[in-house]
Image 1 (cartoon, one colour):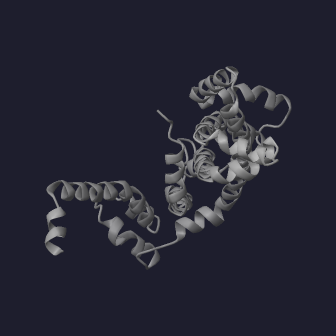
Image 2 (cartoon, rainbow, N blue to C red):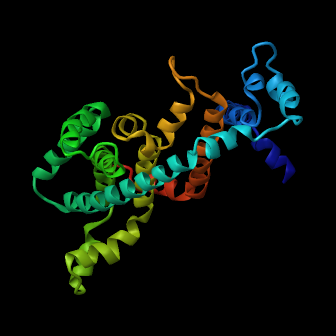
Image 3 (cartoon, rainbow, N blue to C red):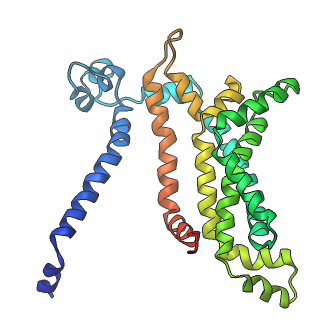
Length: 293
């Protein structure tokens, strides 16, 4: 058995494993380095004299008496109230994903089961809007938002993010529904279900991997958005990404880089946990949503 196992280890296998290990190291290094540096002072993390200061914490020990400090996290979360930005982000993400998935699921199912040509042209129109730069759509909303005095609040930002995200969810869920046989709908309706009951009790349970995958991409769009939230939200309603940018300061205002570093780690950790938790659903959803040849 040992001989057979050893015979299967080919140079190509060794090369592939080595490539994966190198890729993982390169891909994870920026986050690991940032996470480590978030517990240092700025003099160590951005040391020009000796990069090893970021590892040892020479200046951190001199200033705090310890090789690690949570001053960056305290400054970001307590002093600058980063928790408010986290709360705002949670609200925006929740409603953006919920509304996008609701309309995307219903619309994707209707277009997938429709035999009319207008379905194709509606999808083409959605694709055109999805390809447009976000700033183009945002500029169209600015004037009415100012005139109606609803600029700077979370609901207006949710409306714009849903408008930007809806074509993507419509296309993606439409492709999932195309891969579900129409026989399931017809069998359910023969058994006495209405169209909506067949959709709810038969199609949706089969669609869950696709819904989770689409929901995750919608989540990432709203979670990581900078352009829309920066332009449409007031300072007190900022979400995480614009708030992190404000920590960096500007040419007129001095910022605190270590607050930004700590906030970046705080914003990235939930994404890593989410991907790890839903990795099986994401893979099965992407596989199920592959377009048939």
